[in-house]
Length: 466
Image (cartoon, rainbow, N blue to C red):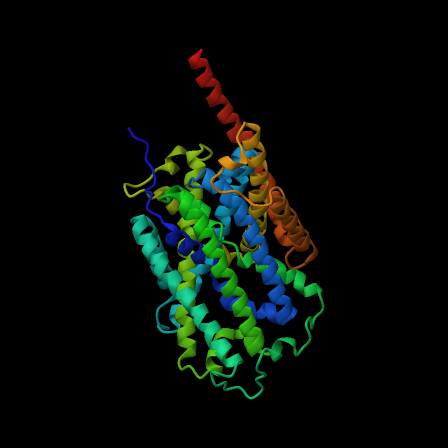
């Protein structure tokens, strides 16, 4: 019986929209105004610049690994092969939890957004509907998923582009501004001072900016389903990073230039405030629709990535083999079901135990982003050493991380600094207090259970051969 395999139908544009689907979430639409209030527009722009630099370095490392060995599961497999199987096991579970935990709140958010137009429908009914919709998009075939994610990502990108264009028109007095205290030509950005609250808030904002770029690494998760990965992956990485950096930093510049730092609109609804000030009718309904598409797309991409992590763990025999089963359309059905179930558990924990269980789960999720990026840098550092040690030349690599070993070392150092920053922030410290013990438990569990099983299996095979 032939081994089941994923369909190789993804192209560069699909990788880009998958990554954008995971990255462009409610963070840029709903949290960016709060960051400007905390650190000022200039401080937030600097923070996003540093976040952009870090994600560029991470993707340069991941590009070499993925082009050399494109597979579903990607960086957790690289961690297993080039660091240790236990570290790879921890990486997969951290990444699975990152998206699965977010799924719980996304189910509820979708229901709340729709209730703006249909207030009589109970939240629980809408939650069931959207859970079923996300499951359906991910379960039929990869073509349906690609098309859905492509169009949802287009909506989000066009929304940000339109916001930036309209905002720049207002800044340069091309578009009329219905705001009495408006200061044109970027004066509002520097009016309160470059760093109105000092330098300390900028450090916390850098951490938030790092998280804002998380999801870019999804490109490598889809490598095993990509047609011509050597060509598609480098192209997707470059185009995704350019799009994200321009859109994210452009959005912060426009917000900082159009809304005073003390404006309540920054924390309430900065996008609606800017559109209202430009005279665009139905701004609230337009943004509600965009937010709905944003959350649906993020949930859709998250389910895709998380279900592939479960499949990859089962394929490596660190979960029951049954979970590696693929449908006739090449969909990891059990990984998909387990991810949806985990999202519902996260949803219930957010309702019934928000201060204990859900808080701990959310802390692990925020810790996971930085840790996974650190492990990617570490794996690439080790990969190149091992590749050369086996007699290969750097020229044998189809895609090479530039400035090796500086780039992977920078990834490791910046991620370690970020973790130290989390420790120094009382509001984020729980991420380490929960995330580190969880990682140790996962690593210990692997060493005690699966390493022993794998050794017994290998020993049995050797005895049969003898």
